[in-house]
Image (cartoon, one colour):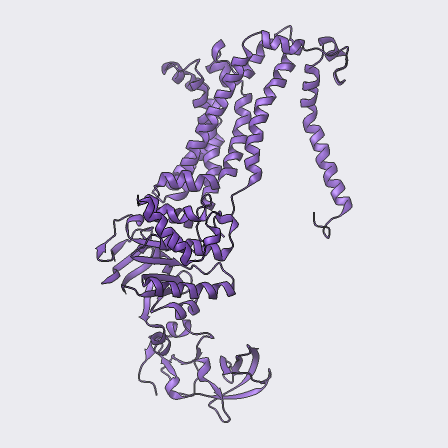
Length: 335
Length: 279
C-alpha cells in the first residue's frame, strides 16, 4: 500500500506559483526527506499534505483516500513543527493528550498511549511540567510525543532540528531514526540540511523552485545525480565545478568533481595554489585556486601538513568525474 | 543592575528625572485628596496645607453620601466601564484575529475601514446617535452608553490587537488545527492568552476616557437612575455656588475604582507574554 500519493499537485499564492506539477509516492513505512534551499516550496508542500493549505490543483491521496477536502485533524497525519508549537498553558501530559481528547477517545486509550509515548521518549520525570520549564531538546521530544500518541498513518516533520544546537541535533537525529525503526511508520521530513537528508532518508526528494529535481535513495543521488543542482546540493564539502577543465567538457558545461576524489599527485592535470587549509583532525580540507582562477575544495583523509600558499598538483580518476552541459543537465557518456 | 555598566551619575540623574515627573504627575491628585478632608474655610485659606486637628472635616464625604444616590452612580459607572471594556476586547480581538489570520478578498480594505474610526471622532455623530437611541428606545439606559463606548473603542482595539495577533506563531495555530481544535478554541485557548499584554494595553487606553466621560452620559442617559459618577458629581457644581467639599470628595472617591481596575490590568502588562510556547 502507498502511504501518500501526490498527483499533478500545484499550488499558487495569487500569481506566484510555489509548487509546479508535483508527482510523488511514499510507500508504507518509508522515510522520505524533502530537501532543498530555502524558498524552494518544501514547507508549502508539507503544509498542503497536512491540509493547512489547499492545493490549487491536483490531488493528495493519503492511505488510499483522496483527502483534498478533508480537514487536517481527520487526515490521519501528525506533524512536528520547527518551533515545537507546544500549548503553553498545558502540562506535558495534557499537550500529548489533547489531540486524542478531541478525537473523543476513551480515557483508558488516552492514558495507555500517552504512557507509552512518555516511556518511549524518556519524559517520565517531566509529565506535569509546563513547556516553559523544559529545555529545547525536551520540548522537541514532547512535540514528537504529541505526534506519536495519535498513531497517524503519516508523520510530517517540518525542520524539527533547526532550533537545536549541534550536539543535541545529532542525538535527536538518531532518536528520530530509531523511532522510525520502532514504529515502522511512514514519515515525511522537511529540511534544508543535506546531512540530515543523507543520514535519515530511505528516499530523498530534491526540490528547487517548486519542482522536483530528482528522487532516489541517498547514495543513488550522491553517486548518480541527474543535474548540476542535485550534484552541488548533496555532499559536504560541496562538489567542485570547473569550467576550464582538462577533460573534454560540453560547450558552456562544467566538470564536477567531489572533493574526496581529488588527490595531490605529482604531474597531476590540475595545477593551483593552496589558499586556505581547514584541519578537522579526522580529515583536512584544502581550498585551492587553480591556474584558471577557479576555486576548488580538496578533501584529504587524515592529517596533512600542507601550508597556505603552497603550489599543488591534483589528479582524479576519469570514472569519478561528472559532466554537465550548458543546461546544467548531466551528460551520461563521460569521457 | 549590571555593575560594569553602572554609572553613579547616570543612575542619579535617571532617578531624579523619574522622581520629578512622579511629583508633578501626582501633585494635583494629592491636592484633591488632602483638600477633600478639610473644612470649606481651610480649603480656601491654606489649599496646600495638610489637614490638621482644626481643619479636619468629613463634611464633603457626608454630603456626597447623603445627597443623591452615589452608590448607584458608582454602580452605573462600573457597569458601563466594565461592560464596554468586555465588548471592546471581545469583538476587537475577534476582528483582529480574522484580519491577521485569514486571507480573504478585501482583507486590507476591511482593516482600513475598521481603523478609520481612529481618525474620526465619534462625537461628530452625536446627533445621529441620539436619534438612533431615541428610535430604538435605548435613551436613558446603560446599554446606550455601553454600545457607544464599544463603537468608540473598537477601531483602536482592532488596530493594536491585529498587529499583536500577527506575531503569534503560525505553528502553534496549525498544531491546534492538526489536533482537531475548532477555530474558536484556537482563538480563545491558544491565541488570546498569548496576546494578554496587548489586551491589557487596550483595556487601559479605553478605560480612563470611558470612566471620565461626561458628554455621552449627559446626552444619552441623564436620568437619575442611570447617572454615571462623573455626571452625578456635577450636581455640586452650580452656576453661582459650588460645594467644593462635596466635589473634591466625590472626585477622590472616583479615583478608587479606576485605580483598582488599573492595578488588575497593569499586572498583566508587566507579566508579559507567557514564554515557552515557541523557542
